[in-house]
Image (tube, rainbow, N blue to C red; front, side, top):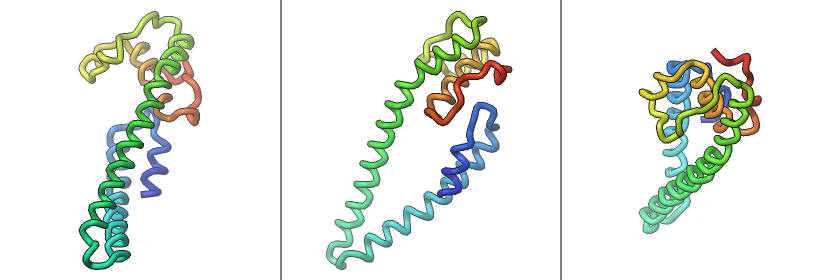
Length: 142
């Protein structure tokens, strides 16, 4: 799981779908192996009559943690995206406007000119990576 998370830290705009799928496979395998060990550890730590409650409690707190994590990181992404888009627009003066993020479907994105698509891809990538990514660089545009 640690290796998978480390690999996810290297994902960028140019990462291929095959590479991304491989990283997901590594992370998913690691996560699957860790989850069962944690449940077994919880079950071994309680008396037999509390086995069901302990298992349910472990699953409940795992769900709460996942929900909380999704909400926090979603809020960070939504907050960072407008700033990243603004940096991309400043760095690429040939792009005067972009479609609303509500219209960013794969079908619609394929229709965009390469300079507009590049601004969006770098903004999304920068928003996900947070402060660890270098700001939008014009040299990276196709």
